[in-house]
Length: 90
Image 1 (cartoon, rainbow, N blue to C red):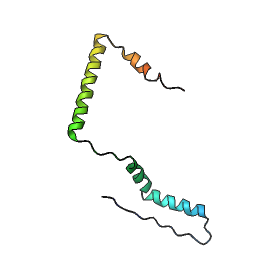
Image 2 (cartoon, one colour; image 1 turned 135 degrees about the vertical axis):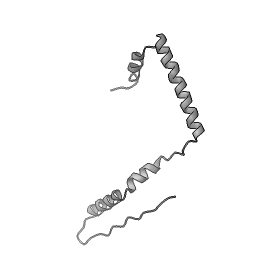
Image 3 (cartoon, one colour; image 1 turned 90 degrees about the vertical axis):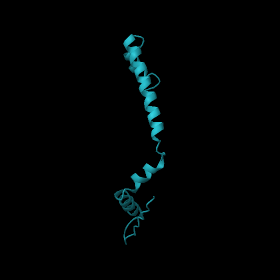
Image 4 (cartoon, one colour; image 1 turned 90 degrees about the horizontal axis):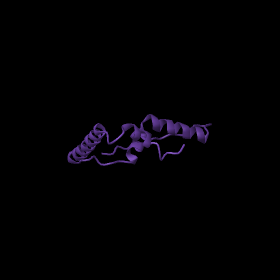
């Protein structure tokens, strides 16, 4: 359900257009319109419980496999931390 809110601002006698726009933006922010619209901008459907559960199981299995390889000494966890920033240029 989408709620619509109307923001109306009337120009005063000696009010400049920039002051009018500033007043409008402040009122829109006060109502929370900007935050709500930014939240709606990249709306994603809620994933079903099955999809979420499957993803959790996969990541858990991946984590367990990684931890086992670390225990066996086949992977150095310190090397993984250093490898993350390799592609990033300063």
